[in-house]
Length: 351
Image (cartoon, rainbow, N blue to C red; front, side, top):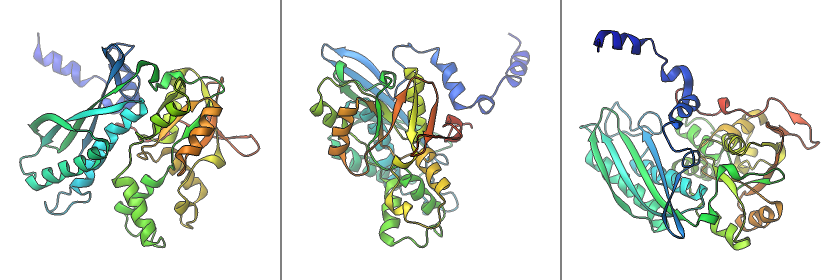
């Protein structure tokens, strides 16, 4: 093989930045079994009446959090919060599949100058979150790296008939979200720009920051569904990449479309009362802000109404699944609001 020719060929190839996250994922899907990939986690049959659920999530310094670079003792994100968020993100993926967590493994890529205490506090944050759900850390790996990276693989189990899959939405289903959206985006804004929201009360500041730093995975929701109807058919995923992203991904996997009611989107009351965000900004944060870690579910209306009543706390029916393969907002009169929702408007790696 001519090495120079090979390198020249590579240099003329497409780069990740040229195609973006979604097209890269489509290319990589060809290397995986079609029946396994496509949801928040892989499902593997390992027991006669249980399925093993596996999910992996990675957090990278400078992308998902910041440990600061000017002085090692100054951090824009505390290590305990990084640990909590890392654990919560993986538990949220299990919840999105209807699964019960069994444990996690943790792989760390560490610059040699990383303070040991930072790593210990990272694990304290992870265990603070995991202990709420009786979920152990099962082991992991360490590696030298130029960038601090936290990669977690979470294991769970689910009954075969109680899997929540993106591909199960049917025309006529209603769309439920399990809590408010936009709070995490507002919390991030406060952390990055402390002067923003100066008219908010200290309690509101803390509430919004906590929404971003310490999200709660909605493992409480699937058991409520099965109590309402043990044989319920449920499509869904979590909203870690945004409410709009979740609805769009479900519709794409199910071959359907959706209409969402503009006035039913659950926005945090503290943001609705502010004077420094326009209605358009509020809407964008709710739809595309991301990292609220709620569940977005599609299910029959009777089950949905009972579920919303039991979940409370911002849970709402926000729309309906339709046959037309488009996802859009409509006003109180049923008129479409342009433009339709799009994956391109949310956060995309390499976008």
